[in-house]
Length: 212
Image (cartoon, rainbow, N blue to C red):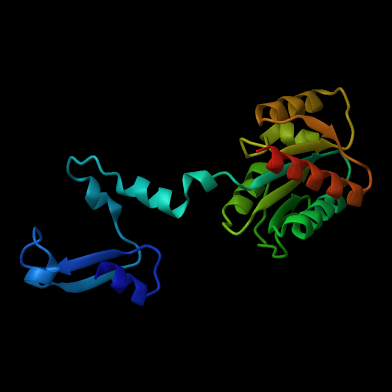
């Protein structure tokens, strides 16, 4: 009965309030009535008494299955020049090759697969937050200078690919290399041609997917 009521309103999550004379027996035996279908149920009421059941955990596991968590691919491009063309080429190649929706973060702002939110972002972690909050995104491509990464980090704890336009032995670059290693990858050389860079990134991601 509860599932049928939720289906009427086409909801993914709902709280159903029932009125019935005896909750220990089936509603088919004693009768019942639905007095509310709440699209934003309060889970706190389920934690007011000892119980091994974790409603919030169950809800999260069913909404975001553990096997699918963290599937967004993250690509970092580092350079002291303008890498917007490289980021755009990489995003376009990933769309063509895999059919992914790709978000980008460059000096000109955040682009969510063709839509610009317009909200100003001050650093890479803020841009990362905007992209990952969009559940439709399959991948993210970030472009930033080494000084920005050294100052504020990258936001994500995991990188699939990191590529640098140049390799200079400065303090900022050493910080970038350490950050990339901590995120689980290595700093590769970024091809100077944007289209070649896009193809290289797609090939590396395809290889990682096959090996996984």
